Amino acid sequence: DIVMTQSPESLTVSLGERATINCKSSQSVFYSSTNKNFLAWYQQKPGQPPKVLIYWATTRESGVPDRFSGSGSGTDFTLTISSLQAEDVALYYCQQYYTVPLTFGGGTKVEIK
Amino acid sequence: QLQLQESGSGLVKPSQTLSLTCAVSNGSISSGGSSWNWIRQPPGKGLEWLGYIYESGTTYDNPSLQSRVTMSVDRSKNQFSLKLSSVTAADTAVYYCARAFENLEAARYFDVWGQGILVTVSS
Image (cartoon, rainbow over all chains, first blue to last red):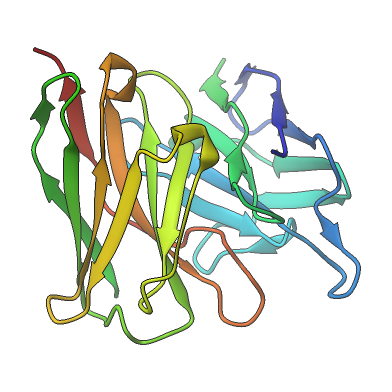
């Protein structure tokens, strides 16, 4: 199985400041024949299901604010919230879909300072 | 907008079988290009993918569940189902159904989720 390791486990950021979440996979999730990284990011608020923010490591889902961006390739990925808003308080998960079984990172909790 | 809704028993006794159904609305389970997935989240913990089923009936379940999973699809009712046998307290979780619109790219990320159903395993 591909193990997804997120860091940090929790993050406290002031409103308007940048939040950065890291995700490392135990093996590459880059598929050279399609030139794509099989990596997604989700946001989960209390009592709600996760919501996809980013797929193919860098493609923002329709309707997701542009303060959310994804970067990285191979085994190392980052989700950045460029200017944290109050509504961004949530848990964030990465997920690889390069191979089955599909696996998620352990999650990062983002809070306001 | 495609919607998913889980239903089933919220309380299951140890050693028994957990049974859940996911109803698909505002879209067809037979429209093609999608896999239909089950994911769970123990209280206060992270996400675990359980498996998928295609409308053809082809399935894949996570080996971590040691062959306790059975999935099925009912095209006439536009729904798919999960059975998890020999449950223990460790199976207590919120269970989600979710769609992955794979198209031709094996894009197995989840763009539509149900609201989730809490299943508690307890005598």
